[in-house]
Image (cartoon, rainbow, N blue to C red; front, side, top):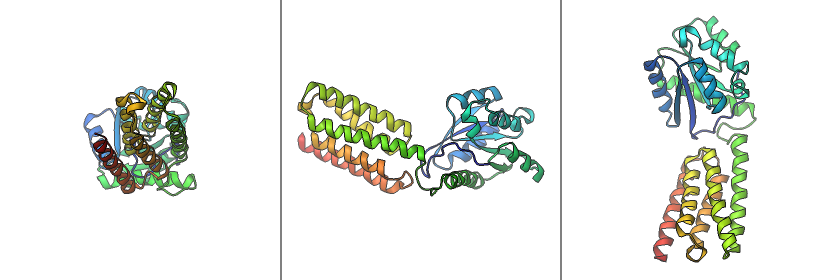
Amino acid sequence: MISLAAIPSEDAPLRFLVVDDRQFQRRLAADALRSTGRGIVSYAGTIEECLSLVSVAPPDILVVDWDFENGSGLRLVELLRAGKAGEAGRKLSVIMLAERRRQKDIDTAREAGVDEFVVRPFSVQTVQRRVRSIEQKRAHAEGRSATDDSPEVQIRKGLVRMYIERLSGLLAALPGAGETRDFTLTCAQLNVLANDLREPMLISATFSLSNYVKSVGSEQRLNHSVVEAHLQAVLQLAELPNSQIEIRRTVTDELKRLVAKKLGRAA
């Protein structure tokens, strides 16, 4: 089964939770996941710890070993699908690792709610293929391309665009003490929203804007062209799919260059 959990689009960071009570096996799995260049890996060593983590901060993909806690890997998946970690556990995408198993075991795992199955010893390429398979199935279930942003990300990016509109209006209304406070606060709120999206380049651009506005401290010292360069860059990043990594990098590099140039002239 393919779960309904939101999976970030290709090239966006992925949060993995590796569930295994054996440190060496956890490290092997984590190394393979990080090889994607996108993996943020955390761990759980017991069923209770896993259920607690999923209920509070669900990962994008759960990676659990069949033999975890003396063969309890399958039991953990059944508990998640039964709602023991809340709705997040029911929808969570799951990859199961196991020693060489029969087809019957693989079928049993899928019936329990496992999305992908990896047989030990596994290669890095095998794990990467399973991760891509989950992303592709998720995209197909949502009726979109695997390189498109997920609906959740699209909604949040829509909020980013709304913040940019508000900031543009506040910038035009400056000077004024009230407007300056509102402008600074809205920049900080935009940065928080970008952090929720977990997209590094959007985080970098909004942090740069917020940090610049806070460091200036007053409308009289605010360089409007620097602010406008930030707003335009953030708007572009909100409109570009996360999968277009090279174009997004060009936008952020150009922002850095323009800001350095404008601030250099002002000095």
